[in-house]
Length: 260
Length: 280
Image 1 (cartoon, rainbow over the protein chains, first blue to last red):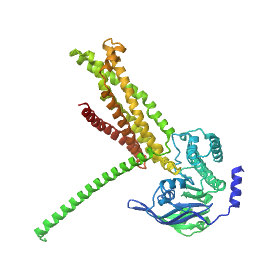
Image 2: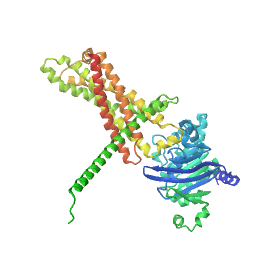
Image 3: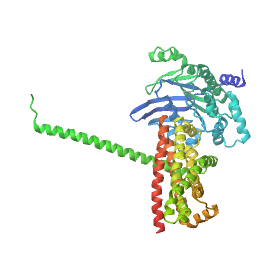
Image 4: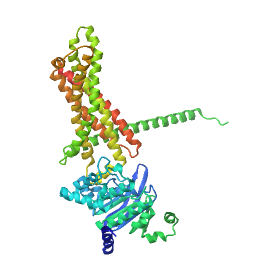
């Protein structure tokens, strides 16, 4: 058992989940043209939990977390992150709020023209401005070790495999110690072994960095491995909310079709 | 057979016609609306660029990197085209000048035409192709692969980091590339002149520059800055506003070249008119 795994287990064991929501979504509506993607979504993410949002492709899962981080503006309803209504914030205040949010993109979204080290330095220089060069270097080495890719520091993104890109992308997100993590399809396009490794990393991040996370996925195995609580979206609405066991024992044909 | 009242027939025809007309009107209105929306997007984009240009946290390192990419990495292409411009212009015009017994005017004629018009426009068009398409494709692919979104959620303003630095670098480097192309063009002209005769380097250059005045060089340099700004802005706008699919990357690169080339020519026409007014 490595140091991080040990810390994770102890973190999970000692964690007292408070019932204070860090993200609160109320009656969220969002559409594109004539198509209404999110109809009336309400959900909460509590401190220290991993909330998995499940749903078919095109059910609006990614749109949901893009509204949380302010990349998309909702047409109705309210998205509150750490007590602040995202859609009413000024650009500067939103920028400050985003410093506390990590977003793992589906494609990884690594900057092609930069090395792995520069990719990690990019947010670090802008968000943790008070760090010295040596401290930055140490921080980068630490997170790269945590994702098991310390030797990839000077590689270009084009030299990395899909799983490595996801890990580096995760490292770039956690390097600034976010309070909230948003994972957009973290295991899509990966083989089952790498998918399991990414799921374990998500749990390790939760344990070590005490993050509260929303994990968007349609990968049931990833959901089973990471979820403290699950929300199922269907046709733009919350179809079911509960623990993993509730889903597994559900007699609803739609839920059963998902968990088969 | 049921008899149809002729008045009813006319009424029906009129209704169909009016429906067709109203459809056409609607389509035209929609088209006009789209143009207006596009125009509003351009104005908004320029407004954001202008605001971020004068913001406190200027990305100086990225600006220098872009200067290197746009300026230094374009040197081989600009060197070859600049020299060829001079050689071709000399080879084409020498026989005509010989017929008129005015071959001594060759260096001056080449220098003036290169500095005033050929150097800026041809280099501008080449830069529109190389730099404009590069910016369109790079920013377009960054958009498609969510890198711009990633930048935004990292509390970095992508307009400030990606767009402002590129536009300013293009505005600064393209005039320098144009002056460099002019110099190489005159050098190429000397080489071309030596293909059919024997002219010393010093004599050729002193002849060339004895005809060039401040009013030849100054307006050309000023319009070069506009060429740079136009190429940078169009390239960045097309890339930054690319769609979400990979097809849109190609479209962004293509439309960046076409629009930038067109605007370079339009700016040139306007600049020539203004210069002409100033001269007269």
